[in-house]
Image (cartoon, rainbow, N blue to C red):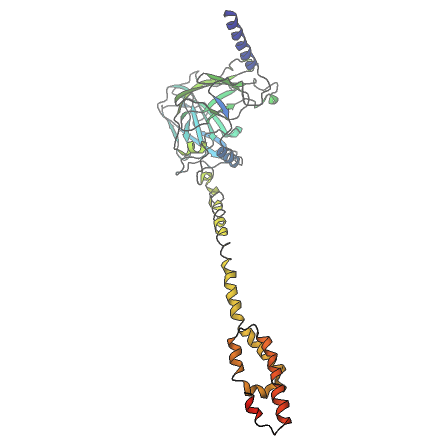
Length: 409
């Protein structure tokens, strides 16, 4: 049993050495230990909104305090100017691009209104370093160099603490911090004076780096500077520790390069950020990036598409009764049609039979109208046969037979 335990311990040490030595890992979280913590893709809504932010390259400047300034009070006003991106919070959503201000090892302070100075109160005497950078509405930091600025100043007197080494990479912890109401939770930081990849290294560049992450005891290594979304936080209080080390696993000496913060996870949050992380539909969410995006991103174009679909199915049965009304119209048009053919035979027979029809007119037309209209044509043929035989031939040939005329009726 002792030998097996020593083998397991040896394998564990080998794995730690391999992780420390690094390698060509494709994912940013290389060497994540097996545990409850897992890395996942960013929420779909955040991926879509991130593409809208690609047009911006913010430029930040700390106006006050000035570098190496000694302030004669324990309250220091901080004035910041930002260009290249709209800064502010949407009143309805409570979200918007803003500035994170970090004093020494404190948690970030969120600044949405740059017109009013941020007051740092009850500062201890000595040297302090203020770091400020622009973040997205979901707290992710911009990675361009102009979006970050730092100022080292002194309160009452100068000391040796909280003074960064400008020749070494400097870590600024960003997220997670505070309270989250949904997973995945963003892990983000800002690296100053550090190459983004080993391919960017030159003989004069700072030492190559790795960021070692520990979340509630689960450890993994980041070798790329990009945000990471994690699942597996415990409901309640959690802790996160970040350290910047070189490729051999040694801590790079600089202030703030080893820092830890508390995170509170309360599932089922109802705030806008929690809903955004859960990919819930939020009307007008694009306006937190830029109010001018409201008319182009309204959800109204989606509403007319389902509206015509039910209407299209309703009119389809309606044209069916239309042909049903057509047959009565045809039957109404038929009665005038037999009158027209009646005029046609009269036009053909008027010369020989106009006068005999006048003698027998009261009896024949009444009977023909009572009978069906279709056999009108066959009755036209017998009328010409009766007219020539009895009246024209027999009567003028024999005048001495008056008795025969009354017998015919």
